[in-house]
Length: 203
Image 1 (cartoon, rainbow, N blue to C red):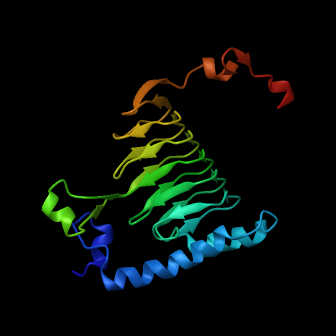
Image 2 (image 1 turned 60 degrees about the horizontal axis):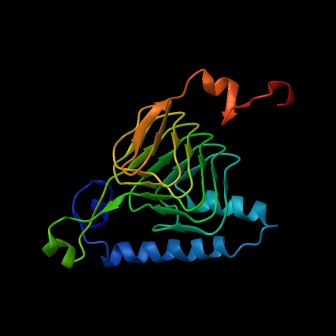
């Protein structure tokens, strides 16, 4: 098995392999073009994302600058996904994000890891584990999601959290390391922020 094939197996591999680098640089050139688009070029941005990403649904929006190891080439977005400034996708292997998920500014979603053994790091080896984020999640500003993590549906991850373990569906989770604070409940049907009631007649 070649180094390129190991990108998606979880095995240790050498990321500076010539075949990998050739493909990666090409994708990074296209990412550079995306980041140079003007705010008025929304249609152009949308078309470029469909070309760059492994999969991307309708009505997705990513605010440049976007940072991505493979230019989105291993990223799978559902429909109506929104990402604010400075999303970093360490997409050395696959990242999956479900429909209607919102991602705040300066979020990092990483699939790449490095061995603890110093001798292997010295030689530049790494491994990759996929990340799965469910539908209708809200990933707060500055959150970091580590390799191999699965986050369920309808999850709120608090700003600045570092997600080191899987999170179940329908919870609010915060902190470093990120832990479940509470479940999404009936209170959230009545209030949207610090005692402020939801006025459904105006929605």
